[in-house]
Length: 148
Image (cartoon, rainbow, N blue to C red; front, side, top):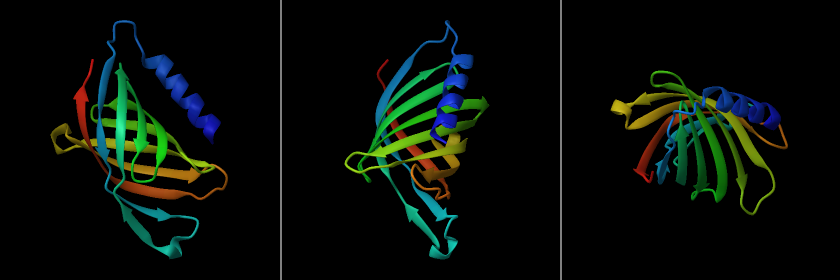
């Protein structure tokens, strides 16, 4: 799963970057209120969480790479987002606990909402070491500041 996500990210990055595109760099914080359900054991029911992450974002062309530190769960994560058409995009996430083994990978789709001030998302992912498919849906509310 990790290799598939890596190849997809690399391919889409190489096919969308153009020499005339300028690099945009932003820093900030993300709030991500969301609901989730574990598809391996749906009898556990659903849950709601609101992770908070510090973010360093690099955008060029139709692609964005976010390096993040999740304050809520003490994890580092890398997110690659790619614009498809207008306010719709696809993304891949890889994260790793700072002091724990294992990690998480996922793929998702986004849609800009609230006049572009937030993003709605739907995501499916799993732990690295065990197939535990989980579905997430919610919103990402970024508070970002332009650096370059």
